[in-house]
Length: 334
Image (cartoon, rainbow, N blue to C red; front, side):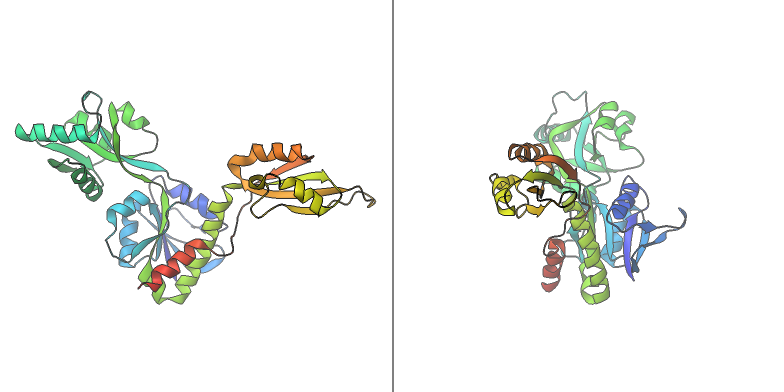
């Protein structure tokens, strides 16, 4: 069995289940009290529901082969040169930032350089800057790299936003999606105080996958679905009817703007009217980036298109799965 860890808590739990379902891999969990589940269509995969904070460690030690976790949590817990690696860094949800926040009252502290100066001044007064966080390794590396050399880390307990108000810390470093909670607790983010921009990612144990062909094959199927789903979310498919003398003449008009003519070009097919008279109509389908939707609609109108319909593909598979090829290259390196 391939053991696949999903978050049992945190804001990633429900979105991860929805993402799996959107990929055609719905998770069956008989009860919210049960910490194992299965994936429809993949009987060789066992789902393990675990705390988000534990997933990187479980993948690292090999008790889980794959896992979905926040990228910032993986960066915090990963061991350099260890077996845990990222397979897909962006699953398209769970976007957040790991940021440094200080009290609003610190009007002279707006950057990390200001914080570094403050830590020196406090040090000379026999006082140390206290930083509360759940990301000790990331914070230490970031602060030392930016000249904040005098500080102590405070163990996080509960909501960290109240730490400065309660007096057991001066600065917080935590994840935020919108910054609203920070502002409501009279905290402000430093202008250059973003440690990591993160989102949900897929990680795996390269040793386990290298040693077991069955696990590697199950991982390939999962990567295929995940990658094709993520790619499809960036595109739309447009279909329009155009009158013309032939498929080639219609294609020539559509391809006058190559960037709006589809991934490899338009698909053109004859439209047969009722009773099959030759009316000279052709159906044209193009797949274009979602943000280019309205320019593509206007282009089809300009070349005579009508009855334009738009559809969102569920999956978009390329000639090969890029994520799986990267994994194979990683495994070949040893």
